[in-house]
Image 1 (tube, rainbow, N blue to C red):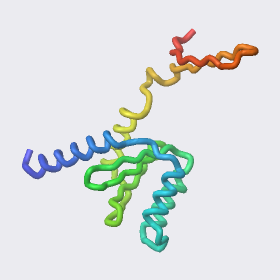
Image 2 (tube, rainbow, N blue to C red; image 1 turned 90 degrees about the vertical axis):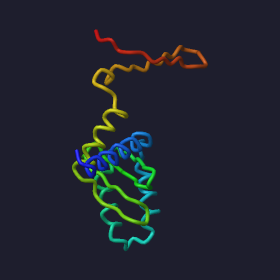
Image 3 (cartoon, helix red, strand yellow; image 1 turned 120 degrees about the vertical axis):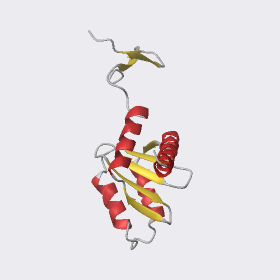
Image 4 (cartoon, one colour; image 1 turned 180 degrees about the horizontal axis):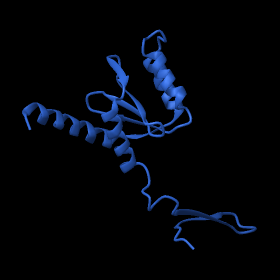
Length: 143
């Protein structure tokens, strides 16, 4: 591996670690507020593409992460699309490799595993005349 490849790999590993530390779900209201703060001047060339990204994915879950060098990543897992930006400097659509990385990060860190899906069970017991409802969390073990 030559030094340029090694340096690129180091940069990607650092990016991946920073994204993993900061990634979280972002609701549509937060995304709309972010759009307003980034593009107070709606004439900005990226205002419309960013707005379109929000509108086309409005029913989906968004994930937001930041890195130490002010990069922001907004990822939509359902449609496997995303936007990156550095406030006031640059913005663009996420490319194939970055989308693949984001999918892996979200799947590994934020989504339940196959074993976990459907196994959690919230049970609420209501006793007539009681002042409280008893709630417990259990694991579904099948029939």
